[in-house]
Length: 165
Image (cartoon, rainbow, N blue to C red; front, side, top):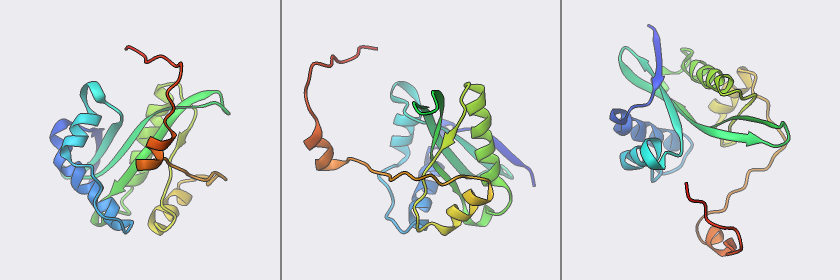
């Protein structure tokens, strides 16, 4: 059974949303507010915020990985940040996750990048074991986010001008 890795397509939106909900369920969370319309809006076109690849087995999408460009000042180099990696449970342990990470690593090198980063929910033992097995290095960083009211409360208007692209 061969694994086919390819870029995401608009026609994949429903399946990607289904798998993103599967990842949340696997981690013990409710489905994210990330449906087909968000995939189409932020994965394609003018508001594109991420890129993605899928793995197909026998013509069916069984896994995905989303990522975006990033820069590491400490390394003085660009790289890629992997946002999500998910393989359907029945398709695991067949090399699909490794193939997806390998394709992201290849894309990183194509873009003259030197690193790939990601996070994992610490309760997701399956993911932690996989990342350890492929040589991922846990580093001493604490992950934080600002969202909702906290994000709104910290916004400061200043002299920085809006960019027109």
